[in-house]
Image 1 (cartoon, rainbow, N blue to C red):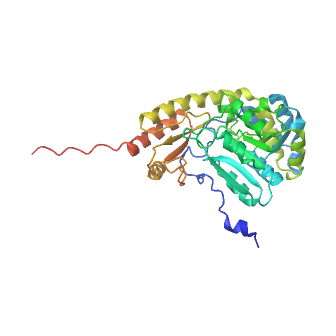
Image 2 (image 1 turned 60 degrees about the horizontal axis):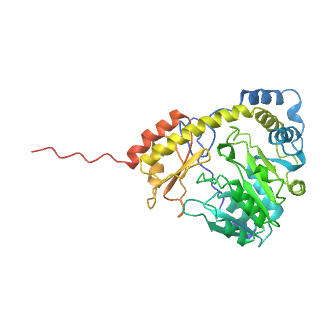
Image 3 (image 1 turned 90 degrees about the vertical axis):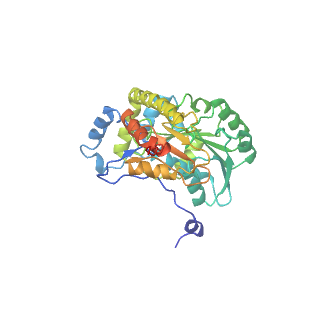
Length: 359
């Protein structure tokens, strides 16, 4: 009943989602700990009133795309909206890769790329990141893959490749598609959007899940040359975003000041978290995302993740050779991070054995 490749592949495994009623501090899936703009709630209330829900939404997400065009100064013909950036990734894979075609990206990175490639029966080229998670630019260029992907800032490391290096890679891959997955870029110092006008092969993906606090709405944006957008329209579901999501997304973009205020708070908390983790003996690369990667090279941190889970705190541990010595920790509120460190310290710094009493 299914293709042999589907039967053989493993499904993507998302982070644990608490069941209703479970009281857990959730620092495992990089959600924003702060609520979206109040204007979003009002837009949702308006969207569900009257006859709106019985009517199909705009197939090209006009209201949402119009707001994105205005905010990012990108023409509407260079934007397509998706059900989160995950759907946009799936659209890119469907449109570019057939059986035997090659997709290349540096690892460790977002593991959904593997799943999407296997669905297409594409060949995967994993190229190792450098010791400090630096992007192997020459190797990516030399791979000459049909599709090349750069997660920037990278997940799970949180590290950022400068825009000038992205531009150099785009130039080297001038006749091949280069996708920059900028899911976390609002927490970073720079982004690749200014490069779009100079590089027709460049595709940039964004999501409103992280910085805009709308993970539950599933909203993403793709910026690319008009010819690329029209090709992606051919593989897009007819009505891939609901009227409610489109209204919420448009109003969230219209209140970017609210988002930037929350991002500033998260960045301050992130800096404090990195310093505390290093004091506990972790190696922590400087993050440009809303999470940090805490490593203890050579040590399997699965028991630490389980200990935090018993304490009511979820973090992400990846049971893979490249990441078994690491925990990816989403940045929560200061109170949530204080609870994390209270639970974490005894797990990595056990109390010294009590001295035997003198006879």
